[in-house]
Image (cartoon, rainbow, N blue to C red; front, side):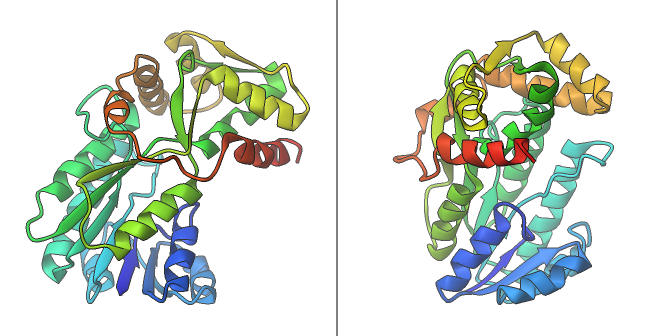
Length: 292
């Protein structure tokens, strides 16, 4: 099969590309970075260097493909990240219609079905609604949960405060490894029909279970996950230089995780089995970064 990925060579994209190459597929990878060209070629993929905002470029990159993997790389320099998702997904849709690609796998997020109150995840909702309107395609929407590697954002906090401060985590929530997302995406791209949406998770933990696992890997077995208010979270992000509008979006997203709204549909549609990567696997990676 000829498969085009919009994921560049990020945490998901590189593993996905390598999986597909091993299975004998012809893979084209879209990246905005000229510096990625040689790296893409080194894993036996065809580079397409350009912007997802350039419709003519996307049409050329999708032409001849049997399947496409759609991913909106986040860009928080955008004045409105959610509108950026909408614009990019509109381009994806036009390119798919123009080229007649049949199999489409869209990377969304848990909470992607919700139309308010999810912070930046609302951009994924826009993407789902736009791509779902396309006729004559076989679509699967992937909804991964909380990425393990987002916990890396707490490294500096642990160093300076000795704890993890969050406005969520009193109850268990699902986490996922990019490797497990890539495994599911590989399977879906090789198959022409699946369910409309599919959740992906590697494990489920409370905040304190996460803190304990990370702390043990770092040599800090007493590491605490401390619940604080939404206001304190937003203020802390702002004090660390995060623009107010971005801090507000992330506070809203974490609040929806705390009150269960973000995970409610996941609970009713859990994957039949969890991924291979455990929290302990990630904790060792986390400890390596922490101790650099």
